[in-house]
Length: 299
Image (cartoon, rainbow, N blue to C red; front, side, top):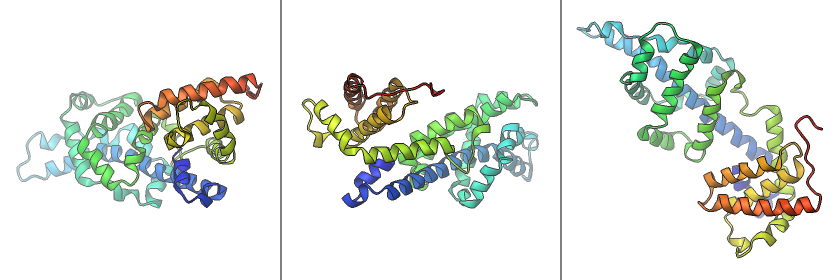
């Protein structure tokens, strides 16, 4: 959607340029991958700071017993080590110099907040943890300490290019990341199949613009087409193309997904608006026998 929004903002001659569209899409995917990788890196560096904290406290002139016995287990827990051993992750950080976006002061601050929590106290109270527990404490850092810290999020907005526009997408990617890291390839945000789908949808929306607008216009009762929010019109065009040209995606899934996107990225009324227009268009297309759907097995 953001790629289409960018294209719609360009001069008219560039809007239908397929090469420009593909380039903008790829650039967008690469940029989102950068931000996502930085967010993963932040969570790991906060966990690793336990070792820095231990070294700093033990080197005091008169260290206390607590200073000499800082628990550093979280810095080398199985989940952290697994990620640091992920070649695509480490190569991505090195190749694009992503360490420059990680602020040492914020790493220290968040670690110090972590050390005060009951969740962390319970975690370090035992020396052995299950893989789920090791992942959960890192997930806790992200969800409960990073995402809830207004100061750090403000820092992201100022220093992490694209965070403000893509924060909700990044949150979704991080949620999926904690569900199963084995599937994450930091060399490519999307699998070949998903990237092909994104490119095919993008080109379909560009090529079928006139036809989609023709379908939408009669449904804009009491609405001036020119006054419909640009994002809403783009979502309608995308939804129509999925209904017509992507046979493995169920119609209900398409409509529900675009309602959700409209609610997140457009106006408060956009979800209802997109739902009503797409549903009416779908009814017409079904009557005209233009919907050809098949199950995932291709039957």
